[in-house]
Length: 253
Ligand code: 6PG
Image (cartoon, rainbow, N blue to C red; front, side):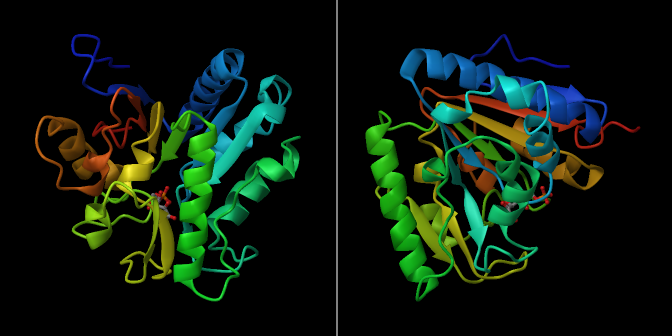
């Protein structure tokens, strides 16, 4: 385990032997943060990540002891991105979180805010979610308590891909359509860097040797202007933590 205690601007990087060891550590991280934020503010607003990596964390949170310790009734849950598919699709990020976590825990359905994919168009869905994010942030002192993110081998996060115009949207745009994603499905709705950076805490979960080259680059270029999407995540006054496995950290197993 490696910590950057010497420079508070550097992210904290915590390494675990494998994905199985990382998942319960991430669940302990989420529990500690949720408990503290609910004691301080009465609520905990968490943005979920898509992809496969967070599944282990979601499954842990749905089981004892976390099932009985998490402050579910005070939680609000959003998504960082969604593929433009029906919620029952195996490609749906909502479905993954629902199956692994949400259907097992006593989180009130009024506090679950999926990205809508049943409206007339992806543009309408993005506009709807943009308004949703804006109003939730307004009710919660302008900050998400926690944003979870995965990392693509090309450096993408959420549905923000390298060199995509969505990376350059203005500060007042919180959600947008991406209709040319290189990772299928090609049509997606994503939160923007402006929205994701309104996080008091960001937790990246990264596993697998295919992520090692890009992870090394993202973590070694923290002082430079961002080029890769993951480098756009620099929340002012927020904490950034990376939980990685040995393979992603570049070690062998
Ligand atoms: C998505 C994502 C995406 C994902 C990364 C990592 O919907 O595809 O949100 O940004 O987090 O591609 O995906 P894996 O965890 O499956 O490697």
